[in-house]
Structures are given as C-alpha cells and as structure tokens.
Image (cartoon, rainbow, N blue to C red):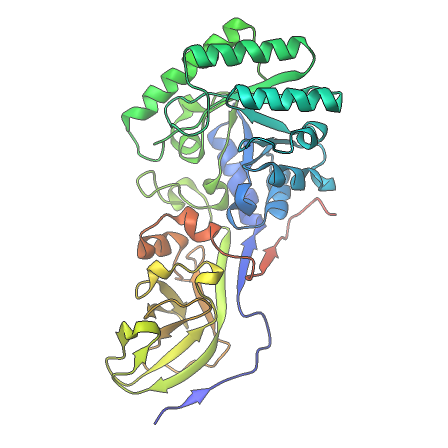
Length: 393
C-alpha cells in the first residue's frame, strides 16, 4: 500500500536566486587582484545563465569599466539599456554578414581576427559615416579565433593602420586568450604570453596605439599577475565560481557563488521495496521508503549525466537523484523521511547551509561548473537579491 500527499502549487515550480550583492563583492575582489588594470565583466551567454542586464549593471556599479560579450546580439541588447549607455562594450564572436553597421553606430568595440572581418567592418563604417572601434585578436596558441603570427598578423596590422588613416577605424585594443591558464604550470601559458608580447610589440612598433592590451581570463586574473597588462576579463570568477579545482576553490579566492537553484517538492509518497524509479528502472528502492519529486529536468538544464549521482539538499540532508533525470522532473529517495510537499529542495548554492555547490554538480555530471550554471534554462525564473543597488531603471 502506498501513501501520497499532494499540495496545490502556490509558487514557482523552481527558482534561480541571483545574489547581485555577492556579484558586486566578487567584482571588487577581482579588481583587488589586478589593481593596475581595468576590468571587463564578461556577461556573455546571458551572464553565464545569471541574467545579462542585472549582472552587467551590478558589475558596473562595483567598478567594471568594460562589458564583454560573445555575440553582437548580446552586445546590442546591452547597449539598449539606458543604465549602460556610457559603458564600453566589446563583442568578439563575428561571422560574415553580421550586424557590423549596427555595432559601429552603437559604439561597440568589435574584435577583428582576419582580413574578411576588417573589410566588412570598415565597409560598415563607411556607410555609417563614423569610424569603427576595432580590437585586433592574436592567435597566440589557443587555435580558435585570432590572427596567426607572422605574415598574416603583419598584413592585418598594416590594413588596420590604413583603415585608421582613412578615418574608417580606430584600433582600440590588442588581445588574445589563454588555452590552459586553469592548469597551473602548463607550458603553454608561458609560450602564449611570450607570443602575445611579441605580437603586440610588433603592432605597436608599426604604429598601433591601443587603449588596452589584454589576455587574462578568470584563472589568469586570479593567479598570474604578469598577464594583467591594461585590462583583465574575468568571466566565471565574477559569478563566484572557481575556474578549476586545480587553481583553487571559490573560498580560496574570497569569491561567493551568485546562483542558488532550488525547487519545492512537487510530490512526496511512500513506496515499497523493489519499486522502480524513473525511466529504465536504473534505480529500484532497496527497502520501503519515501520518494520526493522535483519539478526540474534536463529541459531546465539539470544534466542527465547526473542521473543517480546529482546531490540535492532536503531538510538539512544530502539526497541523491534516484534514477534518470527526465525532461521536466527527477526523483530523490528521502530514505523514509516524509517532508511536506512544497519543502525546498536545493540543488546548488554557495554551500552556506550545507547545500551542494555547482562544483559538486559538475563532479557528479563529469563536467565543469561553467556548464552547470550556464545551462539553466529560461523556464527557471531568475529571482534577484539586490540590497545595495544604486542604479535603477
């Protein structure tokens, strides 16, 4: 015989609480790590799942002088915010035919990695009647975006200087990105830094006068002061998460996780021993117990790879996802406890109340904490904790 208790829903089925006070503190901590450099708050991918606009505003309040985005659509959306009207915004992931003119007219700094991009942005600048703000990206060894050293870099620098003389562009920055800064002592770090110095030195020797040179991401900002140059670009660290366990924990760097993901239990019921749970019956109850239903699934960003391993805090105890994570829901074995429906189940947070962290979920799913927070989908409302804001609108 089984027993079920169900309560009508009285609130959201889930929530991602975003602590903007913690984000501001994290930005200040990161600025202290790089006191001689400006700070670009990276808010790409909807601020790593935290909400681009509120996080951008909070970061600027805490002293960030730049905002960084991947796509031009992200950059243009930020530029449309009145509170961010005077903030420098950089966008680096362009494809042919992108909205170059809109970016030029919005005063967005755009990354240029090759001749095709320089040609498209200068053509847009000619149509807009104003120079484009461009930053030349050097491929110092990551092998993704960026211009190769040698003849290709020399040609790009020469063409960018010609565009400046023609009044079509202003080279505002020289930049690159590390491949392995989250692996302390990796030989590629020194090799990339040497190449960056060589490539920026060449450009400056040819007459480029950048406002900023930058290569430092979160791990470099935290641990490699020799890489800070004029600007640092923390991303994941701004949201209070460590870039990797090898570099150090959030607490090691004085950072506090910004997102807490929770949901009320949608159902609590008693089941007998040997009861299958979720698709495939990969979990069967070892004895008579109680099951709790959490109305979150992989459509909301809960990783299916954490089936059977993902930790959840319910009534002060760590529980584990029982069986497979489904599209919209998963189950935890409550071990005979019978909490009321509506009792909070916390998937991850700062860890203050003993709850799991995003890093715990990353380990359970065999991934990184970046993915855990970034994948939380739009069905989960973001609830802002914002006690200290000085900017409204």
